Length: 465
Image 1 (cartoon, rainbow, N blue to C red):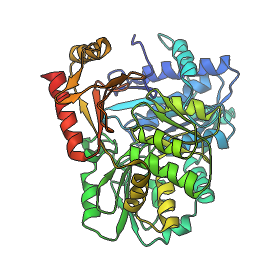
Image 2: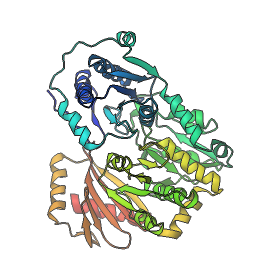
Image 3: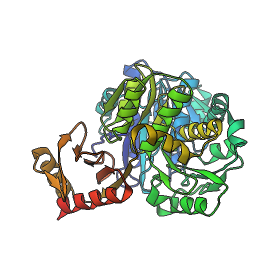
Image 4: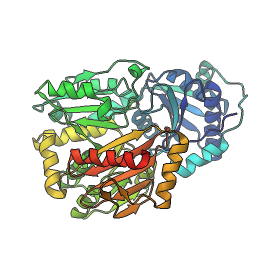
């Protein structure tokens, strides 16, 4: 019996090792038991483009049927935001997405979505986890039997999503703008919706390939060299957009093929939503996001809150009070006027609309941000270490024995979630173990890209010798 634990964003495991049909049955059973205990009766279920998605979604559906739950089951692969929106639009109590998001292709996973259309709050996830049985041996109905009993209905979540986007954006201004858009789906679940919404976009990796050609579908610069090269070789392309495997995260490129990280996108979103659209609300960011967001929020007179890493902490606040912009360093971003959920396509369209309405390039808009908070650069390294070495480094951080990284002297440390070492002058490095992978993440910020690399290299030397 494998003990199943939910991480930063759901349960994830390697297919055929711990991620098996039997273990998916157990997790689905824990979810159904939680639903019964909370008088929930209807669940939306969908899967992304990963290997085995349909099998595991059907397995989850049949377990729900065994507990008498009504299921709205997606047709074909869908993005995580499509399931989240589907929960709201169908008046359901819960959403389940079979996805491992940006993890390598050998993984699959199980995400839980609340009736509000965002991640289930951590306390409820812990309750579901506590209900997961050690074994599962109930007889399961077939999908056909569930349909006959009125427990199963197939829904077109992609159409629901496309209709919602069409009602919410000025797509004509985006389609008629004087720049082309390049889109890299990374073989993920956003490919069909984006093709429908922006039929003239230049498309990359927009076909069904559960192996992702061996590449983890995470929209960070080192995984997007083809998109960058495409933009550099085509002057008519004004923006590059990429999404991860379940299309809730975003990667972006300017007209020169330079990567635009999530910190800069968050600043652009805040500028557009408040200064241009005249909207207001709270700003919520995770611990790894640049402090420039705090500077801009203060200039606008907006409250800002910093949370632990994980979009679920942002979603919990979004469920309780009006949030204008929320986001995390890893590309999960949200704005008001949508569900309390990160959505890579939605955020991409928001930036495109900003460009189209302002008549400015993304580079020009970033300089508008710099005029307010100063320029900066950022990068992140992922260190694949033994568990023993990872724990040794975390112990050093906890004990406060790291006073300098090469020439960079530590002025102060914050430890909301991981450890952020400030050097002064908009320079910092942050160290944190991943919540979903056997990885130690090292984040850095400095005024220029070259110095970011120097900080990262100095940190590696200090940690690894």
